[in-house]
Amino acid sequence: MTLIDPTSAAPVLVRADEAELLGAPPATIQLLADGSDTSGALSAVRTRMGKGTAGPGPHLHHRAPEIFFVIEGALDVLLGEEIVTARDGDFLLVPPQTVHAFRTPADHGVDLLFLMPGTDRFEYFRLVERIRQGQASPQEILDTQERFDNHFVPSTLWESGADGGA
Image 1 (spheres, helix red, strand yellow):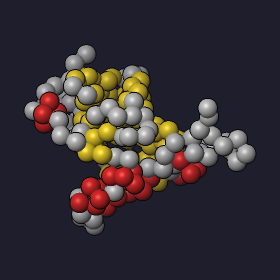
Image 2 (tube, helix red, strand yellow):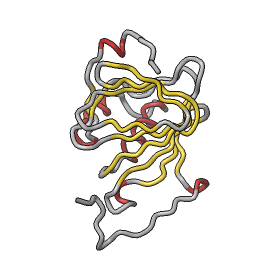
Image 3 (cartoon, helix red, strand yellow):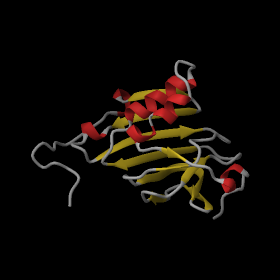
């Protein structure tokens, strides 16, 4: 089974200097391609986070996997009931229904490529940016959990601040 509609698929090239950039260094999200840009294949974003930066809290996706590729740096990732550290060149696939969260360690930032098959995610990231700028309420994230297939759940392990492993 393929996610791409072969009747409408076309190559997609996004020039780095033309991609929409959200945030400001050291925490940026570069919107590369959304599901609607890739004939439904995937959404792709490049994220840079400084040292000791928290990403989203524990959540899961009912329908889509989430793929992480660490270009450079390190990322602590909650995967169900364990925390792992992904480093330069590491690839991580988080299957649907798997509780996950991520943050950078205190001594490392990260340059990271996110891929999420079969979804449109740009509006989610734009909403997160509006919240960061005080232009939207954090409640809006909770109100859009179904729309963006981003369902927040508690995690005692993550909230305890446990460190990642090898």
